[in-house]
Amino acid sequence: MERSLYQNLLQWKQQPERKPLLLQGTRQVGKTFLLKAFGNNEYKDCAYFNFEETPKLSSLFESTLNTDVLIESLSAFWGRKIKPGATLIFMDEIQAFPRALTSLKYFHEQAPQYHVAAAGSLLGVSVGKTSSFPVGKVSFMTLYPMSFFEYLTALNEHLLVKLILKAEKWQPLPDLIHEKLLRLFKFYLYLGGMPEVIKQYITNHDIEEVRTIQKEILKAYERDFSKYTTASEAIRISEIWRSIPSQLARENKKFKYSDVTKGGRTSRFESAIEWLRNTGLIYTANYIKTAKLPLDGYADMGKFKVYLFDTGLLAAKLDLPSQVIIENSKLFSEYNGAFIENHVATELVRSGFENLFYWSSNSQAEVDFVLAKNKDIFPIEVKSGYSRKTKSLKIFADKFNPSFRYRFSPRNITLDNNFINIPLYAVPLLYKEQDIP
Image (cartoon, rainbow, N blue to C red):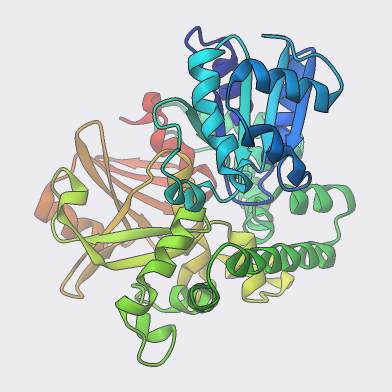
């Protein structure tokens, strides 16, 4: 299946001052598949080394980090000559052996003629535990679950993607196209973006098997909690992880430690939240007191909302029945709109808004997301229904006078003065430079 990050890999390959590449992302988002496909398609050879499957690989790095010796040893282990520029050296699950991570520094300094890529699933956790991480010596990329646009491409609906991205001057799409996209989007919202899930569904259309795969993925993540942390920390992480659906189900989605466990406190769970953030399994949006730049300077780090990195896994955690896919807009409104707000959060993070924020005013109004772009601040409201009311956006606008106000809803594209409605399936329109007024 095509991944949009492939184009970024091609650009990396052509860079004259190319550094070793470190591809991050949670487990099972397709890192191995993508880099193998890239290596096999764009190079004569792809030398693949997996540090979890083959622990004895670590012995090659224990005695030396001299790149001449490493290339000779890796070639012998692989069984073929590794050639500069012709072979992609792919080190997978590199977080399992910190000295392999450190070696990337020496490949950059001593052997830049070799093309080296590495992937890891828990790098956000592992990097913090080693002082020998090659800071400034590697290029980073992050692979997320498949987006709705990538899902459409997997369905061979390339033209639909082009129609959305070519929407000129915020003109609405034809009604038939809009309704088709909403129908496909509901399936995507339920399936989520894990490649194995999407591949299975496209191949077999077995919704029951989809849920089985999702449950297996969730179990794999929970196994990581105990594998990569202490026993006591694993318990706290699991408690946070299991509380996320109920936290999102509330009308006010502000995260409450007391909802995790009776008497829960920040001091008990703060590190668990940070662990889940560093692994990429959750995203957070912090409350801002006022809409001024820089936004993080006005953030209250003790007040935040938590989102799961994939809506399909959120549906699986809730055991949401598949019937909601076909029941009009029920999936959009389930759990107080948790699914669509979660979806928008994942799309914003994917687009580069790594730090998310929200704003509220004395219980009179709440703006789901507040973002900064091009030295401007703009509010975003997420609606599960077709209501035209924009009370919260108006209150925000009266107070902070943003250039534009945005709403994501099931409605078609709409431009009304400085108010823009974007369909739920078209979040990327927000951050396409040429499409922002």
